Length: 256
Image 1 (tube, rainbow, N blue to C red):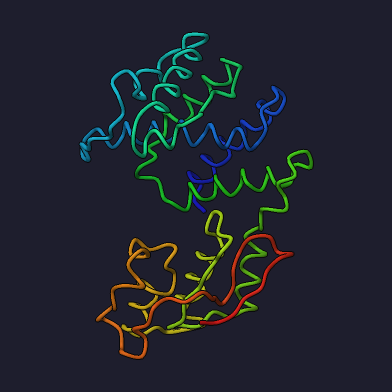
Image 2: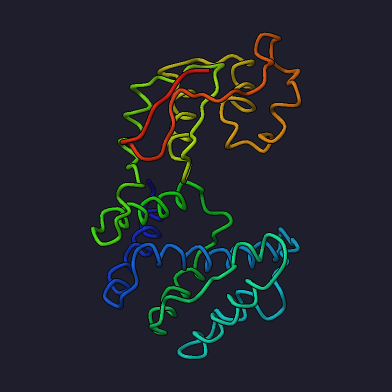
């Protein structure tokens, strides 16, 4: 992990203490981060070189709140969340019922400025994933939240995947998929030269059939045979897996 990556993660995690002292849980902080980073990334996508239409209504953009302070910032953030929650389509679903849980305006300002200084679109997904998993783990370790039963630490995930040894040309299912940690670990295992050297057909299967929950073709797998695969592998996806995720106490698995 680079020094820059470590610095960003430390900054985000560093806000946990002041927020906890102010009554904001790790889970609530994670929720607020997703709203704020969503707005910041939308702002980045709306600018060059992307110049995308983001669908964010006028007056609800990142720039409309990023320079504000105090009560003015707090009220604007609340207004943005309320307005976005009233929109139609996916945007409205994301922000439906969203409320500001950071009631300390000074801390909210520090978080906004911290997010504003970074380029989140160009940031590695590993960095954002590390931030997300780190906060999930902190939340799980918090006895009061009771979230530990839902969170599986990455080292444990990797150990379980190594024990189960997923194989090429077979599907992997996670019926209790949360953040996708087990599926990503399975993909890493299958592409690790230490375990397998995948040929072209195996790579195509991994891309399109092994991890259907991560692919954009999942809805069509049962109806559209994949002509890039050998006939024996052109079959509808059936329930089953090398392993599922979810709560460790309730796991069972079978191979397709």
